[in-house]
Amino acid sequence: MSIPDGHPPLPAPAGTGVLLINLGTPGAPDAASVRRYLAEFLSDRRVVEIPPLVWQPILHGIILRTRPKKSAHAYQQVWRPDGSPLAAITRAQSEALQGAWGDDVLVDWAMRYGKPAIADRLASMQAGGARRILIAPLYPQYCAATTATANDAAFAALAKLRWQPAVRTLPPYHDHPAYIAALKASVEAGLARLDFVPDAILASFHGMPQRTLDLGDPYHCHCRKTARLLGEALAETLGGRELIVTFQSRFGRAKWLEPATDAVLAALPAKGVKKVAIVAPGFSADCLETLEELAIRGRETFLAAGGDRFAYLPCLNDSAGGIAMLRTILREELAGWIEPA
Image (cartoon, rainbow, N blue to C red; front, side):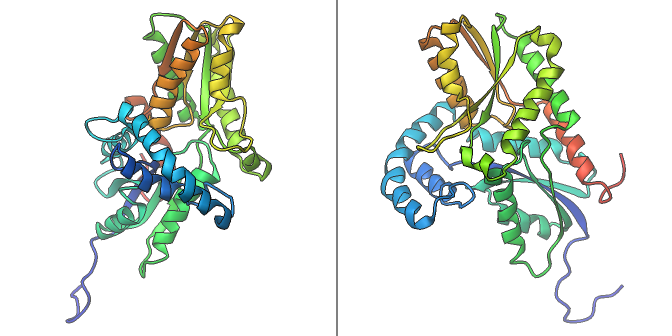
């Protein structure tokens, strides 16, 4: 069909997009970059639910003056030649999924805080011809402070478009059989590589204030179900040992979900648990919270308390098993938009 004279340029042929989203990262491991990142992250009303009139003076008067230098030091310990671990791994996941569902499906990635920004990548996808986009926050367990705020940012970007694409969002996959199977295989492979047999295995999830549970957020229940299903899948490997569930990354004075990972690690040696392995099933990619908080500080805490051996088992990341799992759960959400497998 011919295009009438003077008609605005037509977009590229219609296609489908998958936008992987993770939390975010500073652009560099220095105090200035961390300060900009924290200012954006901790100003999100989904993340900190204290009224802004109360919170903003605390944030700008205290936290952003003291925390960036300390956090920058932590980032420096885990920073990779190709950048932040979280950004590098999410980018690798995106690249590994490119072409997974044919040439007509564009795969890209974005960060909720920092760069690449969700709005920028959505605009790029639309310019590339995507008329149907699956927004995929890579959080296995749903939480308003993670999944919801990622969707919020995407919807805010869509609200500014004259011609919006059709949109779907990836639901939590905390109990998806493919996810549990991938975790099981990853944990078993990690344990097989150790030169010791752990007395206990911990499953550490990111913590949230207790009030999020009280207000009806399903995050705590999702974490517990993931741990239960993983424990059942690993029953033979565990050999009667308990998969101990803990919550990390406490911040501020409010009561957080318990038991706390650092407190449990400090207490285990006195109970005769001298060898420990720890896994982080709530993270789709290794990041500051796993590589520095668990693998470095967690080790120091456990050994200082009298422990003998400590191992951190990596996240699924862009491993073959992790990518196969993502292909499975994302294909399910693309049903009807792409040809059946």
